[in-house]
Length: 235
Ligand SMILES: [Fe+2]
Image (cartoon, rainbow, N blue to C red; front, side, top):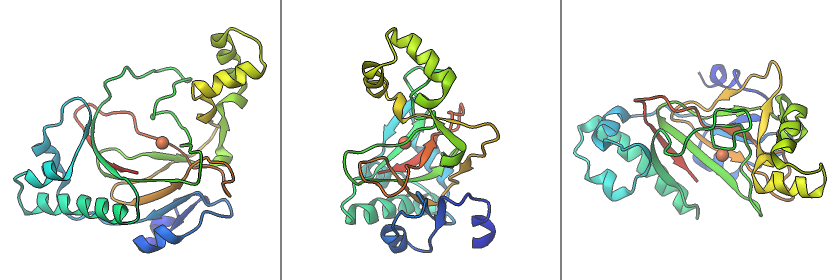
């Protein structure tokens, strides 16, 4: 099952067999996404139903989750999420668990959007990784680096951004691109095949930081589906 699952992914993704391996494997040789595939236990739909999430992003703390009155399968789902929170905290990380029921800010529909639903790289000033797991709802998507073009290098995007900027294509334009996060966003090349992070699998992906041995993992959140909230772990 493991090899059948992993064969669907591009060469930048590597699969591991345990949390310890996920933690200790180095990003190298173009591998910028590590996945520990897992079969979720428990019923996350029961958790969602009990949470009655308002619109937007709700941070779920342990007290709130532990206070839910759930049947056994729902309690098992809560335990899985809390176990992940604990194992990441033990490694000095600061994971959050969110219920995402659409977004409160208006979603930009145009191709120059800079929200999490646009392909982007996470960035940091020093070595850091992003960890994520979707427990319920649509999952995030990854885009192999050789199937993407950085927005500032995408001629139509650069042209339109220069118009928005209203100045010359010089250093101040480069600064403006960075100030508005366009330098972290990417566009799929024709024929690109994004890969799905799936549900239940724990991922560790590379960010953009000075001296990183690999290009950052390009990824995006799914567009919200009305009536289908997500449960997401992020660190
Ligand atoms: Fe991100």
